[in-house]
Length: 272
Image 1 (tube, rainbow, N blue to C red):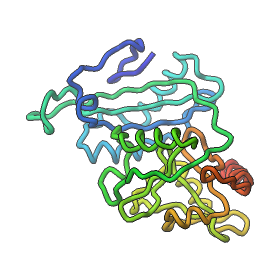
Image 2 (cartoon, rainbow, N blue to C red):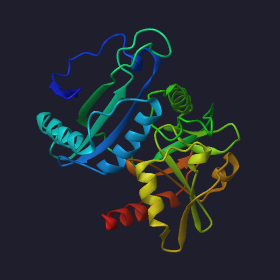
Image 3 (cartoon, one colour):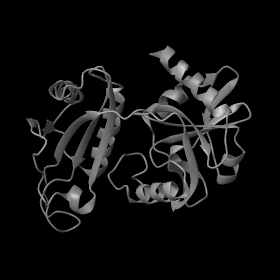
Image 4 (cartoon, rainbow, N blue to C red):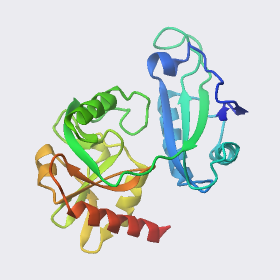
């Protein structure tokens, strides 16, 4: 079952071939982890989705509480109330036909899907990508379906034997990975790229930054480059679905990453 524009439908329900999300990539989305039938950090995800909808001028006929109720019902209808599941909520530009800007206002399509969550990886091997992610663009703070650069970078990383790619902007600053945010341990400071440099304001990233300190380690935003990333003593990657995962720069090993990830996971759990 899926939820489409306020109605529950079978998963073979269709969206128009003229949908602007399909034709032009004019769509935004959120992926939310659900555990035992309960969506996690729902309000934070919805706040980012409203920001994305405002950027594109999408009408928002639903509120966070109503969407939460729909998500819980969808999990039940798909028998996903035990263990981990993923809720994806996608908002597209609607059936607007040809042209970059429709002549008349178009109602967006709202689509919600629920699927089993993949098992988080034990470790992620990262390689530096040649694909650039521009800093300072309006799309940086939102999750849009314009994922072409991420797909190309991920494919290149896999071809080299790595799991994921580290993206950099036009200034040589690290922005994140194709699927999440990155933190690097340098001395006594755990650094993640700033949103001004093109980093996505990830939900798990924000939770880690809110810790501000773990033992003798300060957590903050700052500049990371290809060179400083290679000099880091530990790396972690994070997103809302996989959580916090130890990482390394392929093909090198970074044994301190495992202990760092454990400490952060424990600190996040203690704050729930």
